[in-house]
Image (tube, rainbow, N blue to C red):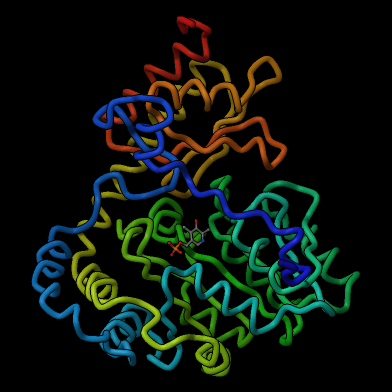
Amino acid sequence: MKFNNVLDNLKTYEAGKPIELVVREYGVDEKDIIKLASNENPRGSSPLVHDALCKEVSKIHLYPDDSMYELKEKLADKFDVLSQNVIIGAGSDQIISFGVQAKANENNKVLMAKTTFAMYEIYARQSGTTILKTPSHQHNLKEFLEIYQKSSDIAIIFLCLPNNPLGECLDRDDIYKFLDKINKNTLVIVDGAYQEYAKYKDKNKEIEPNEIIKKYPNVLYLGTFSKAYGLGGMRCGYGIANENIIKSLMKLRAPFNITTLSLKAGIIALDDENFVQDCIKENFEQMKIYEKFAKELGFDFIESFTNFITLEFNNDKNSSEISEKLLKKGIIVRNLGAYGMNAIRVTIGTPEQNIRFMNEFRKIYLNKMEG
Ligand SMILES: *Cc1c(COP(=O)(O)O)cnc(C)c1O
């Protein structure tokens, strides 16, 4: 069957390998597998969420509240915006797709960093738009601006703050100076999937959605419950923007786009900020151990404002080989070879998981692997 042309140059998104696959393909015992590949919260989610979901199960024969009143109100409260400024999605991924659908088409372009969240490009390709990328892997606003000013038809700019998969994060003040130069008809998607981590580590990285939407009616801010809140399996994310943007995106949303349980999980997760802050504190304590480890073995890393760290190797090592050998030991990481980098991205795990990673990695790195 012939499908639409846009599908011809599309690749299926390759998510981090699930534990079940490593059991099947590598014959590793399930209890020996650690997944440090998808930036999930290694401590899970708040116990309050578990309890609330057990009760909520009695309601799963009912469609969820399609107005999503309670979750929107809570998010509006948290970020000091109005509920008309909020849209809920099946992960913030879904809001990215709405943004792209709303603006990108065959006659315009979108702009992103060379190495950034893969879904920007995938949704963009589905729309038939032209994709422009900066020369540098990491976000470089000078490059963004040069490309933007040379081209009159850029419909969307993606800024991932902090950036997945590299972990770097621009300063708020630099973002604002950049946004001042952008035409109000260009949609700027500010992806804050890791903002909870970034603002904990460095206040200069904090993007406040209420401030940004007041100043910039063309910015769509994104947040998610999948990372710091530990709810990746619930598929719950949100967008915050000027009411006009939200109204347009709402037209693209199917009714009941998240489940009764996802909705409840998001609502209750917001009641337990202590859990989230504890996890973030431990995350950065553990990250310091990774940094020390890298220095000790003599390879580079990118300073990270997230819950993962990108380790970069010299030419004498190969990131694909390292990832494959780790996998055989039951440790799943993200190889960044596909981005033209000799690097791996490792999600910061629990202290026990990190020790295991470092022990196995050291052996592989120093070539002390049998076989
Ligand atoms: C994980 C992630 C998301 C979205 O995750 P959802 O699970 O769809 O909410 C969005 N952007 C970035 C950069 C991410 O890393």
